[in-house]
Amino acid sequence: MAWVNAIIQGILIGGLYALFACGLSLMFGVMKVVNLAHGDLAVMAGYIGVGVIAVTHVPVLWSIPIVVILMAVIGYILQRSIIQGAISRGELTTLIVTFGLSIIIENALQQFFTANSRGIGVGESFITASFSIGSQIVIPWLYVVIFVLAVVVLLGLQQYLSRSRYGRLIRAVADDQEAAQLSGANYRHVFGIAAAIAFGTVAVAGMFEGMITTISPTLGTDTILLFAFASVVIGGLGSLWGTLLGGVILGVAQAVGAQINPSWEQLAGYAVFLLVLVIRPQGLVGQGATS
Amino acid sequence: MSTRSDPPGGRPPVPPEGRPDGKPGYRAGGNGAPLLEVRDLVVHHGQLRALSGISLTVFPGEVYALIGANGAGKSTLLRTIAGLHHPTSGSIAYDGKDVTGLRPDKRATAGIVMVPEGRRLFPSLTLEDNLKVGMSFARKGHWTIDRVYELFPWMKERRGQKTAQMSGGEQQSVAIGRALVANPRMLLLDELSLGLAPVIVQRIYAMLPQVLESGITILLVEQDVSQALRVATHLQCLLEGHVTLEGTPAEVTREQVEAAYFGATEGSDHGLG
Image (tube, rainbow over all chains, first blue to last red; front, side, top):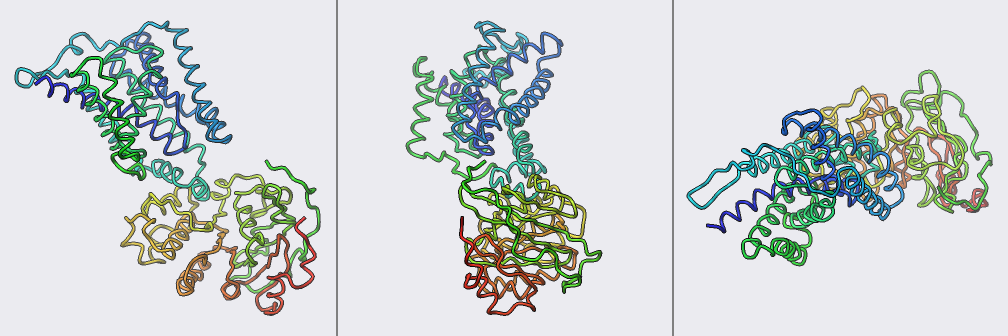
């Protein structure tokens, strides 16, 4: 029964991993930018959340939309300024620039918030509350809520990309920038919107991370970025549902690994990641566009 | 952006500036003011001089054809008019206003819309989504997605399909539709016939009268000279970045066109610099 428990927990945490990963996948799919600062952005969002809650005293759930909007605005501005500048100078430049961004964010967080880890309090009762199936399987409510919200966010993103005017333009620009320009689209603005979405989704994920465990300035590059990469690669680039599948597989692998031996948690996750990379480098859900 | 070896070309263009009013056209342009005026355009691709001082004037209602062999600079000229290349010197005026420095998306919303060479559809989008993208920043006007479906009746049934699975001719029609729904005033058509069977080319060009009927002026690039001669009201022949012939299809003889196309006559002393 402990196994079933581990698998269920792994699935639930996979939703969070997918949320970490989808913005990374979107930015690569649309503007071909591998955002090495993606994990740090999640942590930054978490800290902004801590700040917002401390200053405004809004309930934790209400702080999420505030943080998302703040991060989306930051995303748009960064994309239109620094990242766009890097894109026009070549693909390698975007790697260097986002790597630099990662270092800056990490050190700024350490400067302002110290290296101590911090959690986002959702109230003792809610963290510990759980329900059980039978006598052995215990599922924390918080994990369920986060998984459901993660899926809702992914669903919303998919609907946005497939139905809205700007969602369509994002897909069009991802396909052919020049042709989109000929249809009157300012691709830089479309890039900005895609970045805003990517930053917004990773902000949600960063807040959740702070609720489930704690965040610290180095967490972004140490774990989140790697988990996000692993989820994207396992699931397959450019597919939102693939990303969810990738996140779930990574989560389950980690949970099962930890069940065998607590020190194997990370190892098991990366073993599966490598296995997929060897057997099916295009990811489990093939290639194709975000749809 | 690029390094240039040769000085910016200030050479006057080969052809005469204006042409007498009242040259035949589908509708010899109302007030006589040109819709598009290109002057002394010089464009470089890196070191290579692709256009050496091209001038052309397109009046409303015309079908202006640019012909010429491969590498003559026709597509470069069209892409520069659409804003995808920056000229080294020279100017482009549209509807009386200078647009030389305008971004391509701004030109599109102003009414200069191009059907690019090789279709350039969005392969991961459905047919209808391709049209909707074309309509995203459309001007007001005659063309809507439904009107495009009337023009190409086969599309309606297959609107949910990805365009990647369609034939070349079908893709070309979608590309035309995507440009039409933007309601351009100046439609640039780049090599519609490229890679298509003659029968299909005929079928695609059959849409031209309806497009003109809606008040759209056309500037087209065509390798297929006889096709261009059939539809054009005015034509210009380019050779190695220079204009070698200009006139109406009625004015020019087959021999003149051949000479201008292959550079057999005096046009050939212009080197590539």
